[in-house]
Amino acid sequence: MTDRPVVVLAGFMGSGKSTVGRMLAGRLAVDFVDTDAEIARRAGRGIPEIFAAEGEDGFRKIEADVVGDVLASARGVVALGGGSPTVPAIRAALVGHHVVYLEIGADDGFARVRDSDRPLLAADDPADRYRDILAARTENYRAVATHVVDAAEPVSSVVAAIISRLDQENS
Picture 1: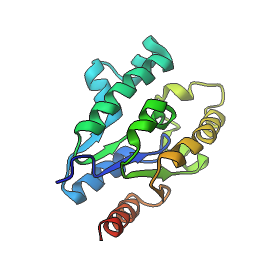
Picture 2: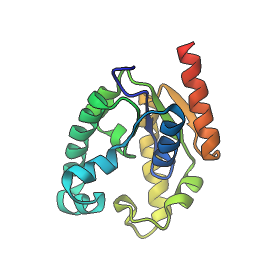
Picture 3: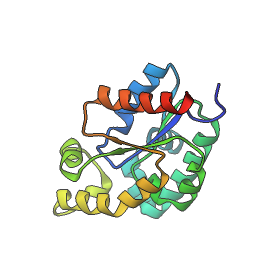
Picture 4: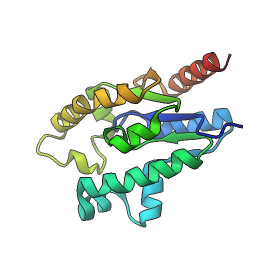
């Protein structure tokens, strides 16, 4: 048994971190932790409520604490929030972990989240906002990634690609 997460999933909103994470954890027969869900559980309120009350900086401080705890204690699959790799303390905590960047283009990603309640997309043109934030964060995702997988593929294909990469590392 490993003393750290088997794999950590990073990527922008709409890349499928939670969906892929649940399926991957099931295939590997390990636990799954979604750090956004863990933040909401610990705070007793949803992410939009935290953003509204604390602002993005306040949210990122809470997120850094929770992600640090999860990385130190989780032994399965961990899905990070979309902005986690923008936080220096989280980037530092990810060193030495198997981090898979679920890469998705702006059009595919936005199509998946266009009808959701995402605080960062509250703008006159949410599609442009999505594109701008994705472009600004891509370097951070690539910097923490040990592997990059095309998240526009079907979920089962994404999971199979991750398992294949893990098997290659462990052989």
